[in-house]
Image (cartoon, rainbow, N blue to C red):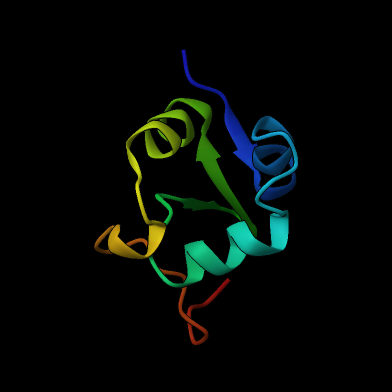
Length: 74
């Protein structure tokens, strides 16, 4: 069963690289398959591992509908 990770936990899961700030930026740009639960951005540990294993250049990966827009209600 997957566990949801916050961006800080996701960064720790990756060994501290990329930083939580970088993960937030990647999510905002649509490169990271995140979800919003309440006010938190989360990613399942399974999806994070798949993203890590399957990504060459993260800028080439775009997940439609998951970008966190500036005007999105929280």
